[in-house]
Image 1 (tube, protein in one colour):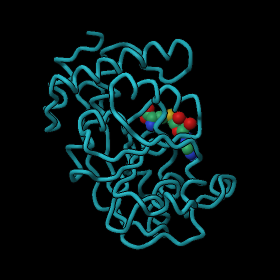
Image 2: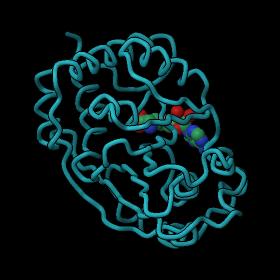
Image 3: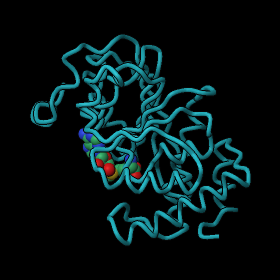
Image 4: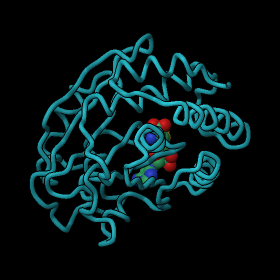
Length: 238
Ligand code: SAM
Protein backbone atom coordinates (compact mmCIF):
# COMPACT_ATOMS: atom_id res chain seq x y z
CA UNK A 1 0.00 0.00 0.00
CA UNK A 2 1.17 3.55 -0.68
CA UNK A 3 -0.79 5.42 2.00
CA UNK A 4 -1.16 4.29 5.64
CA UNK A 5 -4.65 2.85 5.15
CA UNK A 6 -5.10 1.73 8.76
CA UNK A 7 -4.42 5.29 9.91
CA UNK A 8 -6.83 6.67 7.34
CA UNK A 9 -9.47 4.20 8.50
CA UNK A 10 -9.05 5.47 12.07
CA UNK A 11 -9.15 9.14 11.08
CA UNK A 12 -12.31 8.50 9.08
CA UNK A 13 -13.97 6.63 11.94
CA UNK A 14 -13.33 9.60 14.20
CA UNK A 15 -15.46 11.57 11.73
CA UNK A 16 -18.13 8.87 11.78
CA UNK A 17 -17.15 7.53 8.36
CA UNK A 18 -16.63 3.80 7.86
CA UNK A 19 -14.34 3.07 4.94
CA UNK A 20 -14.65 -0.44 3.50
CA UNK A 21 -11.84 -2.22 1.63
CA UNK A 22 -12.98 -0.89 -1.73
CA UNK A 23 -12.84 2.69 -0.44
CA UNK A 24 -9.43 2.13 1.15
CA UNK A 25 -8.06 0.67 -2.08
CA UNK A 26 -9.45 3.64 -4.00
CA UNK A 27 -7.82 6.08 -1.59
CA UNK A 28 -4.56 4.20 -1.95
CA UNK A 29 -4.68 4.42 -5.75
CA UNK A 30 -5.64 8.10 -5.52
CA UNK A 31 -2.69 8.84 -3.20
CA UNK A 32 -0.24 6.99 -5.42
CA UNK A 33 -1.45 8.72 -8.60
CA UNK A 34 -1.41 12.10 -6.85
CA UNK A 35 2.24 11.65 -5.91
CA UNK A 36 3.08 10.40 -9.43
CA UNK A 37 1.30 13.26 -11.22
CA UNK A 38 2.83 15.75 -8.83
CA UNK A 39 6.21 14.97 -10.38
CA UNK A 40 4.87 16.30 -13.71
CA UNK A 41 2.37 18.99 -12.67
CA UNK A 42 2.47 21.09 -9.55
CA UNK A 43 -0.66 19.90 -7.72
CA UNK A 44 0.10 19.96 -4.02
CA UNK A 45 2.91 20.71 -1.59
CA UNK A 46 1.86 17.65 0.42
CA UNK A 47 3.29 14.58 -1.27
CA UNK A 48 4.29 12.19 1.52
CA UNK A 49 1.87 9.31 2.11
CA UNK A 50 1.14 10.28 5.74
CA UNK A 51 0.53 13.89 4.78
CA UNK A 52 -1.79 12.91 1.95
CA UNK A 53 -3.79 10.59 4.24
CA UNK A 54 -4.17 13.21 6.97
CA UNK A 55 -4.12 16.66 5.36
CA UNK A 56 -5.95 15.79 2.15
CA UNK A 57 -8.06 12.67 2.68
CA UNK A 58 -9.01 12.89 6.38
CA UNK A 59 -9.44 16.67 6.16
CA UNK A 60 -11.86 16.24 3.24
CA UNK A 61 -13.82 13.54 5.07
CA UNK A 62 -14.35 15.82 8.08
CA UNK A 63 -17.17 17.43 6.04
CA UNK A 64 -19.22 14.28 6.60
CA UNK A 65 -19.08 14.67 10.35
CA UNK A 66 -20.26 18.24 10.42
CA UNK A 67 -22.74 18.25 7.56
CA UNK A 68 -25.38 15.67 6.78
CA UNK A 69 -25.35 14.93 3.08
CA UNK A 70 -28.48 12.96 2.09
CA UNK A 71 -28.23 9.93 -0.24
CA UNK A 72 -27.97 10.94 -3.89
CA UNK A 73 -27.44 14.64 -3.13
CA UNK A 74 -25.80 16.80 -5.81
CA UNK A 75 -22.57 18.55 -4.87
CA UNK A 76 -20.24 20.89 -6.76
CA UNK A 77 -16.67 21.26 -5.53
CA UNK A 78 -15.47 24.70 -6.59
CA UNK A 79 -11.73 25.08 -7.28
CA UNK A 80 -11.26 21.38 -6.68
CA UNK A 81 -7.57 21.32 -7.71
CA UNK A 82 -6.47 17.72 -7.25
CA UNK A 83 -9.94 16.79 -5.98
CA UNK A 84 -10.28 18.16 -2.45
CA UNK A 85 -12.65 17.78 -0.83
CA UNK A 86 -14.94 16.58 -3.68
CA UNK A 87 -13.23 13.46 -4.97
CA UNK A 88 -12.37 12.24 -1.47
CA UNK A 89 -16.04 12.64 -0.52
CA UNK A 90 -17.07 10.60 -3.57
CA UNK A 91 -14.84 7.71 -2.53
CA UNK A 92 -16.47 7.63 0.91
CA UNK A 93 -19.95 8.28 -0.52
CA UNK A 94 -20.25 7.01 -4.11
CA UNK A 95 -23.98 7.89 -4.06
CA UNK A 96 -23.17 11.63 -4.26
CA UNK A 97 -23.78 13.19 -7.70
CA UNK A 98 -20.53 15.07 -7.98
CA UNK A 99 -19.34 17.93 -10.19
CA UNK A 100 -15.71 19.02 -9.94
CA UNK A 101 -15.02 22.53 -11.19
CA UNK A 102 -11.64 24.12 -11.79
CA UNK A 103 -10.33 26.85 -14.07
CA UNK A 104 -7.08 24.91 -14.68
CA UNK A 105 -7.56 22.30 -17.39
CA UNK A 106 -4.54 20.19 -16.52
CA UNK A 107 -5.80 19.60 -12.98
CA UNK A 108 -9.00 18.17 -14.44
CA UNK A 109 -6.91 15.94 -16.71
CA UNK A 110 -5.30 14.47 -13.59
CA UNK A 111 -8.70 13.98 -11.97
CA UNK A 112 -9.97 12.25 -15.11
CA UNK A 113 -7.09 9.81 -14.88
CA UNK A 114 -7.72 9.17 -11.17
CA UNK A 115 -11.46 8.61 -11.73
CA UNK A 116 -10.73 6.12 -14.50
CA UNK A 117 -8.31 4.22 -12.26
CA UNK A 118 -10.62 4.04 -9.26
CA UNK A 119 -13.74 3.30 -11.30
CA UNK A 120 -15.93 6.21 -10.18
CA UNK A 121 -17.74 8.90 -12.15
CA UNK A 122 -18.12 12.65 -11.77
CA UNK A 123 -18.85 15.58 -14.06
CA UNK A 124 -15.69 17.58 -14.76
CA UNK A 125 -16.29 21.25 -15.42
CA UNK A 126 -13.51 23.37 -16.83
CA UNK A 127 -14.57 26.93 -16.08
CA UNK A 128 -14.07 29.84 -13.79
CA UNK A 129 -16.66 29.71 -11.02
CA UNK A 130 -17.87 33.24 -11.86
CA UNK A 131 -18.70 32.13 -15.40
CA UNK A 132 -20.33 28.78 -14.60
CA UNK A 133 -22.38 30.49 -11.88
CA UNK A 134 -24.07 32.60 -14.57
CA UNK A 135 -24.81 29.56 -16.73
CA UNK A 136 -28.39 28.30 -16.34
CA UNK A 137 -27.18 24.72 -16.56
CA UNK A 138 -25.34 25.10 -13.26
CA UNK A 139 -26.95 28.05 -11.50
CA UNK A 140 -28.97 27.08 -8.39
CA UNK A 141 -28.80 23.42 -9.41
CA UNK A 142 -26.85 21.88 -6.52
CA UNK A 143 -27.81 20.73 -3.03
CA UNK A 144 -24.28 21.55 -1.85
CA UNK A 145 -21.25 23.54 -2.92
CA UNK A 146 -17.91 22.92 -1.22
CA UNK A 147 -14.61 24.80 -1.38
CA UNK A 148 -11.24 24.45 0.31
CA UNK A 149 -8.27 26.79 -0.10
CA UNK A 150 -9.69 28.72 -3.05
CA UNK A 151 -10.24 32.34 -1.97
CA UNK A 152 -11.16 34.62 0.89
CA UNK A 153 -14.68 33.82 2.12
CA UNK A 154 -16.06 37.17 0.92
CA UNK A 155 -15.10 36.37 -2.67
CA UNK A 156 -15.69 32.67 -2.28
CA UNK A 157 -19.31 33.25 -1.28
CA UNK A 158 -19.85 35.01 -4.60
CA UNK A 159 -18.25 32.09 -6.44
CA UNK A 160 -20.17 29.39 -4.60
CA UNK A 161 -23.61 30.54 -3.42
CA UNK A 162 -25.01 31.06 -6.97
CA UNK A 163 -24.62 27.29 -7.58
CA UNK A 164 -26.69 26.30 -4.54
CA UNK A 165 -30.44 25.64 -4.66
CA UNK A 166 -32.66 27.32 -2.13
CA UNK A 167 -32.60 25.11 0.96
CA UNK A 168 -29.12 23.78 0.08
CA UNK A 169 -25.80 24.71 1.69
CA UNK A 170 -22.39 26.07 0.88
CA UNK A 171 -19.71 24.33 2.94
CA UNK A 172 -16.53 26.36 3.32
CA UNK A 173 -13.44 24.64 4.72
CA UNK A 174 -10.95 26.92 6.41
CA UNK A 175 -7.86 26.54 8.59
CA UNK A 176 -7.27 29.03 11.42
CA UNK A 177 -8.76 32.55 11.75
CA UNK A 178 -12.06 31.50 10.18
CA UNK A 179 -13.97 33.71 12.64
CA UNK A 180 -12.31 36.88 11.35
CA UNK A 181 -12.88 35.86 7.76
CA UNK A 182 -16.50 35.14 8.47
CA UNK A 183 -17.10 38.52 10.11
CA UNK A 184 -15.74 40.20 6.99
CA UNK A 185 -17.98 38.09 4.75
CA UNK A 186 -21.34 38.27 6.52
CA UNK A 187 -22.70 41.14 4.41
CA UNK A 188 -21.65 39.44 1.18
CA UNK A 189 -23.26 36.16 2.30
CA UNK A 190 -26.52 37.89 3.01
CA UNK A 191 -26.47 39.87 -0.29
CA UNK A 192 -26.05 36.54 -2.12
CA UNK A 193 -29.07 34.89 -0.47
CA UNK A 194 -27.14 33.02 2.20
CA UNK A 195 -27.29 32.80 5.97
CA UNK A 196 -24.48 31.46 8.12
CA UNK A 197 -25.90 28.51 9.96
CA UNK A 198 -22.96 27.33 12.05
CA UNK A 199 -19.18 27.05 12.26
CA UNK A 200 -17.51 23.88 13.52
CA UNK A 201 -14.03 24.38 14.88
CA UNK A 202 -12.03 21.21 15.43
CA UNK A 203 -8.51 19.80 15.53
CA UNK A 204 -7.47 17.76 12.52
CA UNK A 205 -5.51 15.43 14.77
CA UNK A 206 -1.86 16.57 14.89
CA UNK A 207 -2.36 18.88 11.88
CA UNK A 208 -4.00 21.61 13.97
CA UNK A 209 -7.09 23.77 13.80
CA UNK A 210 -9.67 23.49 11.06
CA UNK A 211 -13.07 25.12 10.59
CA UNK A 212 -16.10 24.13 8.61
CA UNK A 213 -18.54 26.95 7.96
CA UNK A 214 -22.04 25.96 6.85
CA UNK A 215 -23.93 28.64 4.97
CA UNK A 216 -27.55 27.96 4.12
CA UNK A 217 -29.11 29.28 0.91
CA UNK A 218 -32.27 30.96 2.11
CA UNK A 219 -33.25 32.99 -0.95
CA UNK A 220 -32.34 33.07 -4.65
CA UNK A 221 -29.17 34.89 -5.63
CA UNK A 222 -29.77 38.15 -7.50
CA UNK A 223 -28.98 37.71 -11.23
CA UNK A 224 -26.23 40.31 -11.08
CA UNK A 225 -24.10 37.86 -9.05
CA UNK A 226 -21.59 36.40 -9.61
CA UNK A 227 -20.01 39.42 -11.24
CA UNK A 228 -17.05 39.10 -13.66
CA UNK A 229 -13.75 38.12 -12.01
CA UNK A 230 -12.14 41.53 -12.30
CA UNK A 231 -15.08 43.18 -10.51
CA UNK A 232 -15.10 40.63 -7.71
CA UNK A 233 -11.37 41.08 -7.17
CA UNK A 234 -11.44 44.88 -7.40
CA UNK A 235 -14.61 45.44 -5.48
CA UNK A 236 -15.45 42.50 -3.17
CA UNK A 237 -18.96 42.59 -1.71
CA UNK A 238 -19.12 44.29 1.67
N1 SAM B 1 -9.51 22.68 -3.31
C1 SAM B 1 -8.22 22.11 -3.57
C2 SAM B 1 -7.51 21.76 -2.28
O1 SAM B 1 -7.99 22.14 -1.22
O2 SAM B 1 -6.46 21.09 -2.34
C3 SAM B 1 -7.36 23.01 -4.46
C4 SAM B 1 -6.89 24.27 -3.80
S1 SAM B 1 -5.86 25.23 -4.88
C5 SAM B 1 -4.96 26.17 -3.75
C6 SAM B 1 -7.04 26.37 -5.58
C7 SAM B 1 -7.71 25.86 -6.84
O3 SAM B 1 -8.79 26.71 -7.16
C8 SAM B 1 -6.79 25.83 -8.05
O4 SAM B 1 -6.85 24.57 -8.66
C9 SAM B 1 -7.34 26.92 -8.96
O5 SAM B 1 -7.19 26.61 -10.33
C10 SAM B 1 -8.80 26.96 -8.54
N2 SAM B 1 -9.47 28.27 -8.71
C11 SAM B 1 -9.10 29.45 -8.14
N3 SAM B 1 -9.98 30.42 -8.47
C12 SAM B 1 -10.93 29.83 -9.26
C13 SAM B 1 -12.09 30.30 -9.92
N4 SAM B 1 -12.46 31.57 -9.84
N5 SAM B 1 -12.84 29.43 -10.64
C14 SAM B 1 -12.46 28.14 -10.73
N6 SAM B 1 -11.35 27.63 -10.13
C15 SAM B 1 -10.60 28.46 -9.41
